[in-house]
Length: 275
Image 1 (tube, one colour):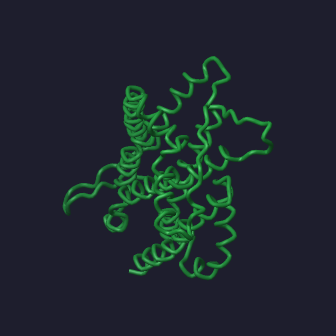
Image 2: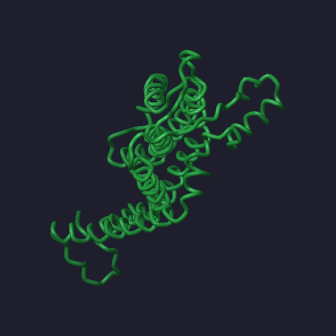
Image 3: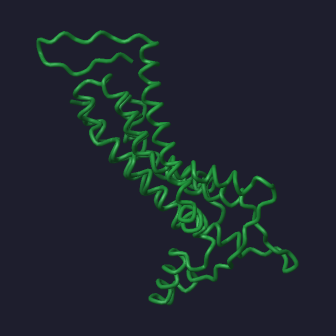
């Protein structure tokens, strides 16, 4: 990748950068991203009660927004009464001496990374942009906003819909009345992280398809041809992320929507290649 900054007619083109110079330039952007994540990490550390009690441990409480909203919906539409289920609250336990402290650090780091995500993507774009031609820059204008928007949409979808159903499923599941549920804090945070971050990344599917189309690897004709087959792939992806049937179905709905959007996105990318 050579830096070819846009310059006015008559000006001398800037000298191409060597591989080591590229690495040095990349190091600067990585350093800035790490600083941004570090700032987010410190903010999370200083807001321990809000980050953990309100956000991370929110789905463990019966008065969590999603549970209340589902019950209100069931009251309004009696045919959906099954949606209003009793969330059996539970206590999390720490079996290792350093478990709470380590989860405090790791949870704050994850929160900091999520907050810093837009800045990290912007830094990546700033590094790549000088190597693009003006036409290429125009074709991906607003991509930073789109990637960030899709990521946060996925995280919110996973947090408010997928995670509550999965957590409620495990909390209410009883193999035998003789067994009491005592969930480990590491297990809980691991599941919550998986359900939210994985969903945020999966929501990047249209962006991935766009760039694959730009390098002529993927076509809209291919996506349309295998539309029916995609249901199987979507089911496998949803099953890999979720833990129960309701969450699986909920996950399949946006994935199918993203697939349809990707057909449109790839078609738009093909039009720019034809010009």
